[in-house]
Image 1 (cartoon, rainbow, N blue to C red):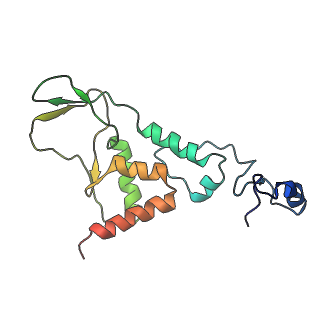
Image 2 (image 1 turned 135 degrees about the vertical axis):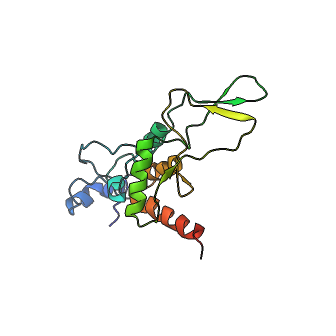
Image 3 (image 1 turned 30 degrees about the vertical axis):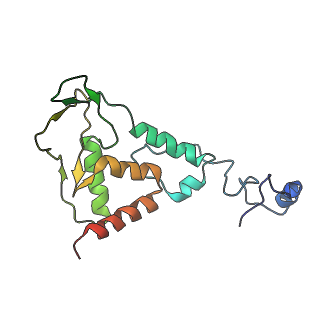
Length: 175
């Protein structure tokens, strides 16, 4: 059931709707829970459910915060053979070894035939990466970048992220 928002022409009926028995904890806006649990939100790399997302007053802010946490700048830089100043490496495709192992287990629970975490080696070329003291690397599982998979779980409910991964797995699998 969707309830009237206070911005509708029927805003003066909000008290009437309350008297009719709106579920406890519901405001006049649809799907916004006033008295949500104060439980600690999941870490940016941990999945959340659609039900949890519906319980939040600011779901967009919740997801934005998670994505920002994954985009922590890295001290890693890219050096060019031509010299010049090193360029910062984007943190988007990076993850720790622990995050990669946890993602491997998560993908196996989904039923994907994945067996190991790999660290791709890039062909020699005019560029090199100096990771400095950053433990994050561009780990992969069956050709899927772990850092990008973490972003799926940060930006979408678990049910949606897993369906996207399964759809991509089917699309890439030989027929």
